[in-house]
Amino acid sequence: SQTIHQWPATLVQPVGSPLSLECTVEGTSNPNLYWYRQAAGRGLQLLFYSVGIGQISSEVPQNLSASRPQDRQFILSSKKLLLSDSGFYLCAWGDTDTQYFGPGTRLTVL
Amino acid sequence: AQKITQTQPGMFVQEKEAVTLDCTYDTSDQSYGLFWYKQPSSGEMIFLIYQGSYDEQNATEGRYSLNFQKARKSANLVISASQLGDSAMYFCAISHLVQGGSEKLVFGKGTKLTVNP
Image (cartoon, rainbow over all chains, first blue to last red; front, side, top):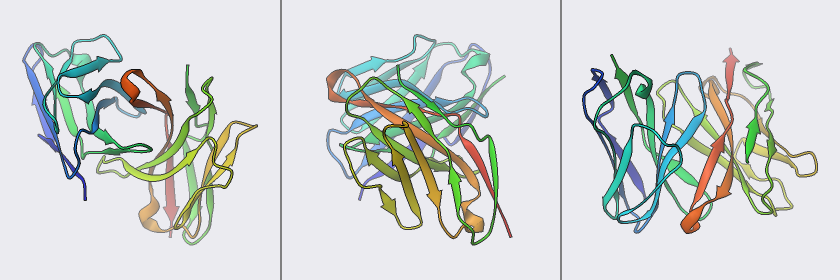
């Protein structure tokens, strides 16, 4: 069966510091991968998606970037965090009909 | 653009009773999917049920059923025999095809369900 991992689970970072969040998927090959962000009390907003290694599409222009160095690895990065980057970051993988989410990373920027 | 509207910020239900969570959508796509996810306080998003726009029968998964009314653009979630563990946020979402054959999900703002003993 497929499983999706994210780390770290929680992160507190100062403004202006870099960020790297990692997502890995097991049990499937060449999955579509997604990064979503959930602001406090809100629904999810798609940030990036990837249909293959090195292929990244951005939905919202912002302070973040994504990379997919391996088939089942998806990384979310920032060179300098802003206060507005705080939120709950969820990685997901998709099959033909459904997207399945990881446990998420709660990021607080101070 | 795709849009999901969940008009109930909070809902309360007694244990063992049924509850309906409302969801209306707007899309110009001919083909799309409708989803419901559960988010407990731990934060994880748990997939509950899926309905394709061309599916004529309402989807069911255990105690969850999706009341799909295409002409009214509604996709309400019905939870039967509520349990205390059903207390959580519930999100409705619609899929939209994007470049490369991938699909993105557009989410509503959610409904907080509280099940009372």
